[in-house]
Structure formats: structure tokens, C-alpha cells
Length: 552
Image 1 (tube, rainbow, N blue to C red):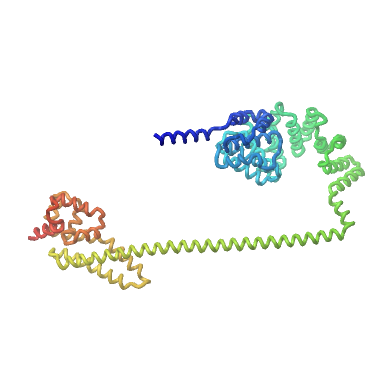
Image 2 (cartoon, rainbow, N blue to C red; image 1 turned 90 degrees about the vertical axis):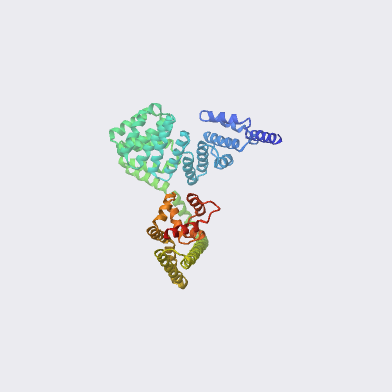
């Protein structure tokens, strides 16, 4: 009774430990409205004290949801202080969706920190570990972020393919704006590769979806479309696109630099000049070089060569400003620059020496490890070979002892048996073979041991031939003996070892000779079939007497 009480108490304790805290329901609810109200989700999650959470699972769920909320509220984390409990727990626990999201937001943190290599590793692992997840929206975002990394690496094929996959997932999830954004990026990818025919289907689909595009998407579409037409469109198509762009987009949002470039392609140099002047009023420092170069080209096409030359000089000054500053500094501080270069050269040399030393140590260590592995492998192989040799040695010793035992038994039969000459002749032939093998085995030298052992194998294997020849001889000379055995219902293999009994072999010799593991049971069954009871003569005497009676 006490045992049952203890078991019940333990069960209740385990159930109590497995229960979630009061915050679990809140976490599930926050997860349900995270996409629609990420700001509200963030406030709720930040209001939960981590110490109040009852288990690692709750802490992992809270860490993951809080990381998602921070990302959606454009609070870019560059460390894992928040997400770490989720990383630790979901590595070996949780659903495919938990793993998918955890690896994705781990990758987002690496992206925020500027480590695209580790970010890509996390994104790839997210798809692998979360393959069975039905969270297609997170999968879409993973492929979208992978695309941005491929863009920075100028890997246009991968950039295009990942955005195609992301577009497919966004479409399944009903995220039409994200879907259109992927289409625009695919157009940009094909344009950068000069594969304009491949870009055209995606441009056509974007045109059909213009009514649902947000204003930022419209800006992106027209920018991509005009750039596409600048490369492969007709003047009429480019002019229509420019007019449509001007009629659709407010002046304060127009990309005047791209528009100036379009006018330049159309040969409308006055319009191009006006557009670039518009751009000058809202120029960005990062676009200054492009602005100067385009301005010089427009002036040249207008025949205003002095202004073109002036603009070109400004372009050269801007593009070479860093080099120019270095040259100016070099003129003033030649000695200081020389000292810095010498110091840098020495530092590089020292660094190279350290690198070579480290590499040498690594190579030496790897060489040592390789040698150790080779030696260990050879030792293992040597031990295996030794075990095999010992096993073979024991095997052949056992066979040799069996042959000696067989020879002694047959010698005794030749000395004592009264069976017919034909059977005796077979036994003598067997004895001759046995004696030859034994003498051969004893006289073998190390180089020829294998041949002697092979002969032993053959001799053991040929015992069945001896049994059969013995039986045939007896069967020819003692037909009534065999008729009697058949009449008693003996099986063929039982008659075989009855023949060995009949010529004088003992039970233990027959067991070794025929290798019958069931010898004693079989002997008992034969006695029953022959009608012998325990008080009767033994089986060997009975069969020998039966054989001699037929002779008489």
C-alpha cells in the first residue's frame, strides 16, 4: 500500500512540474496576433518577467517571440542576449516551426551585425531543420533575406532563383505586396544580367498588379521598368514609360537622376538638363559622382563643350578626391609617409612570419596526428591478424587431434574386427591416407604449413566419402542387414552411422567422425526403432552381432 502511495505522489509531482505558468496562455495569444500587431506584441512581451516563467520551454518561447517582435518593430539586435534561450532549447527540442523561426532570427541578428556568411549558414539550416514546417511566411522571408546576401555578392543567378522561391511562398501566404516586391527584384536581376527576354514576363505581371501596389512599390516598379527600357526598349516605349511615370508619381518623389538618364537615352538633352538640375536641388552626397558624370555627358550632347569639360573636371575632382587628398598630404609629409610605410612593411613581415610559424606548427601537428593514426591502424590490423592466426592455429590443432583419434580407432578395428575383407580393404585405404597426412603434417616446415593444413581440411571433408564407400561395400555383401534396418523404419543418415557401429567404431568415435551434434539423441531413437531397451546389449554389439549372423 505504501508503495502505491509513493508512486501516486511522484506522479502528481511530475505532472505539477510539467505544468506551464500563468504566462503560457499569454505567449500563445501573442503569437496569434504577432503578424497583425507587432507593436502590441512587443509591449506585452516586454511586460513579462523572465524569472516568472516556469520552464525552459516557456523561456525559449518568450525569447523567440520577443526576438520576432523586436525585428518587426525595426529594432535591430546585433547580439544574442534575447534569443539565446530559444537557441539553446530548440536545438534539440521543439517543433519544425520552432527550429525554422529560431534559425531565421538568429540569421537576422548576424545580418544586423554585418556577418553575412554566418547569416547565410543560419538561413540554410533553418530551411533544412524546418522543412516539415507549414510556416510558409517565415520560409518566404528566409529566401528573401538570402536574396539580399546574394545581391551583395553579385551572384545574380542565385539572387533571381531565391526571389522566385520567396515570391511563390509570399503568394501562397496571401502577401501580395511582398510578392510584387519579389517580382520587381527579379526584373532587376535579369536586367543586370542583360537577359531582357527573361525579365519581360515579370514586367508584364507587375503591370497587371499596379492597382494593388503601394506607393513605394510603384516607385520601385517604375525605376526598374525605365532602367529595363533604357537597355532594350524602343524610344517610343521609353517615352511612354517616362510620361506615365511623371503623370503617376508626385514631383517630390521622382528620381530625377534616373529620369535625366532616360532623357539622355532618348536624345532629349534639354529635358535631361532640366531633370538633372531638378536633381541638383535634392541631391544626395552618395550620388554626387553619378550626377557629375551624367551632367558632363548631357552638356557634351548639347554642344556646350566648355560646360561639359567643366562638369567633367568636377567629376574627376569628386571621384579622385580621396586620392587627391593623399597626394596633397604626401607633398607635405614625405618623410612621415616613408616612416609609416616602413613600419607597415615590418608589421606585414612580422605577421607573415607568425603566419608561417603557425602554419608550420599546424602542418607538423597534422603530420604527427597522421603518423599516429597510421601506427594505430597498423597495430589494430596486426592484432586482428594475430587473432586470426591464433584462431586458425587452434582450428588446425583440433583437426589434427581428430585425425589422430580417427587413425587410432581404425587401427584398433583392423586388429580386432572380424568383418569381411572388402570392408577391411576400405578401412586400410583410409588408414593409409590418414598416416600419409599425419606424417606430412609432422614433417612440414614453416613455408609449407599452409599446404599441410589444406590437406587436413580435405581429409576432414572427405569423411563422408569414406562413410558412403563403407556403406556401399556392406550393402553389397550384407543385403539382409540393410533390409532389416529399412524394415525397422530407419532414416538414411541413421543407417549411415549404424554401418560405422557395425564395423567396430565406438559411439564417441562416431560422434567425432560424423560430426553429428544430435548423436546421442539419434542413437536413442535408433534403439527404439530396433526395439532395444536400456537393459539390452549396447547398440554397437547388437549391430555387429546382426552383421555376423548374416555371415553365418
